[in-house]
Image 1 (cartoon, rainbow, N blue to C red):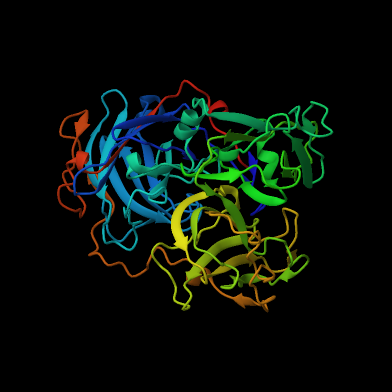
Image 2: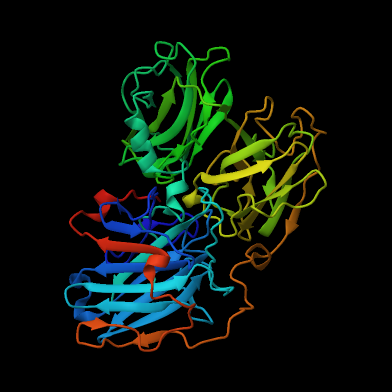
Length: 571
């Protein structure tokens, strides 16, 4: 059983029905990767017709009496959770496969779309349950997540979710999960959350790694022992690391990788890494770190006490667990081969928690913060952003405006209409902010009637912060928030909460579908006792049968490794 702190309810976990979020990046056509020891994914792109095809195999042991289901979804790009996901479900029963094009606006049973845009290519029950299904990248259906490819930037990717179970489709509860970023033009992706790039960097003779952990010899005042997490709910731990014996020259950080103590990982809420008093990396639960672009690095020289790095870790122990010894931290990939651009990090919203103790009204309310135009004094390129609130946050929006006050919509700044504080990550981005531009950050909260929720540091309090990685670094831009005291700022703005609704926040799915409704679900019988093809296809774009002209994902379930050992449990 897992205790859901947001709803206060106990959710049963069924081993046979689980939802997991993959983390994966692919850097060449016809690539294969294994995720969590359970799934083998294979995909490729090519041709003018952009098509997403999914092939899944489930062991027959998971289909008792020949009845089981598998679901695949495209999550909201900034979160990847079930809420906000575009989903297809294939149900096997009585020798037939039923395809359901669905969507989810909350954690629970998804709803059927008005139109079915998936085509069943084939299925088999000869050995395992195998099914292949396809859809167009752009269906023109407002109840589908459109997969739009621009340039192959790391932002041109989508998070995937998958679920399966024996019997008929049923809600499986909250369980093990990861975010999966599948880049669509994989060969061009050079940075972001990528285990492949980290492995390449680790083998580079021009790059070394240093670790900031509780047992690191470089930790000032350390005993070489793990940190015993207190039994109180909220603990902030500050550590300083002295690398003067190593950092004797000009160095740059080119990648960050979180280090976990598996037993205590669910209690590590987030950590922030500082250098020279400035934030350079924020982490809040993602399993893979962040790789900077090949011409960008965070400098490790040029300030007083330049050999020292600081790390603040927030532990969240609501259950008061005892004897929890933690040695989590971060691995830095650093190089003397100086890169062209020095990176910086700024915080939007209320980064300093200047609203400390301010009460958030009950109901659904939003609050706006402005990064003023006078603060951005040079052209910047944004390479990553992490949205951060606590459990009452349900949405974080950013609006980029040029010097004329016009909203820049291509590309959109990081936003989440289905924010989930348990699915935070640094989102790879690639767009420019010009001198004189401004940014409006909006956080939306849902506070139950009778509750008193304040801004503050504790997990049961609230925050509104957007950590933005960019280059080149601009002095004095550590905070571009509502206080307005950055160089060129015009002073603090007046803040107010505005009552709103979820329907105003959540623009997807559009209730007014643009497609012609078709019968959904669609059921197909096999042409032989073991192998089938669709006999009644849903409405689909042309040439969907040619999977090589789209994105092909092959997921094979390898059950030799236990779920608890393969995936990180995040509460």
